[in-house]
Image 1 (cartoon, one colour):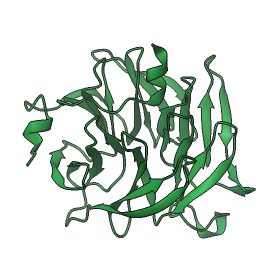
Image 2 (cartoon, one colour):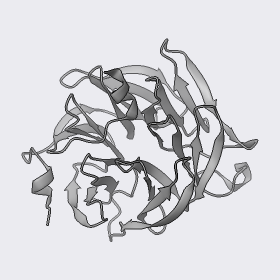
Image 3 (cartoon, one colour):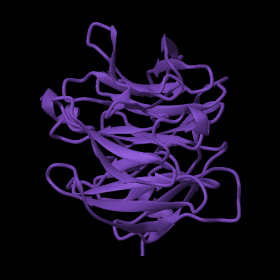
Length: 288
């Protein structure tokens, strides 16, 4: 049976690479050699090269989860502005989506891209006052490259998202009430076929909740939660918890070999080396 020792290359401890934030989130690796991440509370998007100071890229409308589309354009969930944005290659910002069937989105939280260019994103409702909601429930949607947005499924409090290596399973972290990860089987169009509970993340602790998720090339699922980052085998078996110095909200694999795991942990950003690469964002594969 696997243990954390099997998946961690460096067990000597975390490296703190940036500090002085309020609540960090939304990490994603750019293959030009840097990470993006956000400070949700200050609505700022940053970039950082390993070993160098971070720098401010732009302000956001409560930026949170990030990914790249198949053209290498940065996609950002902006919760305060209740929208998805796309940063064009020339740096201009486009509102990609702020309504679904004419109804205003609640608070987009996390977003991922499938290899056909489809974007999946979570839209929890809980933090939007009832009187301000057009959609009363939390949901996961898919947005196709031609701009068609469709409901995938309703979820209590959908938060982080990840895809299995074969892109047939969509993992959804549920943050509030019962804390768990859904495994949603999807078809070629991205529609739900069936779903099940992949992992129960309930624990008698309050320092963290199921939130950001990533998957490595072996199909292991990494999900932030109470006390740190929980690691599960492809079958949902719990391998262990990487205990973090601060409450951790999200993670991303980066570096040239995708084996540097970045942790956006409250006021700081940390890294730790792992033995198995993370699954690349699909756009990476198109760069040759």
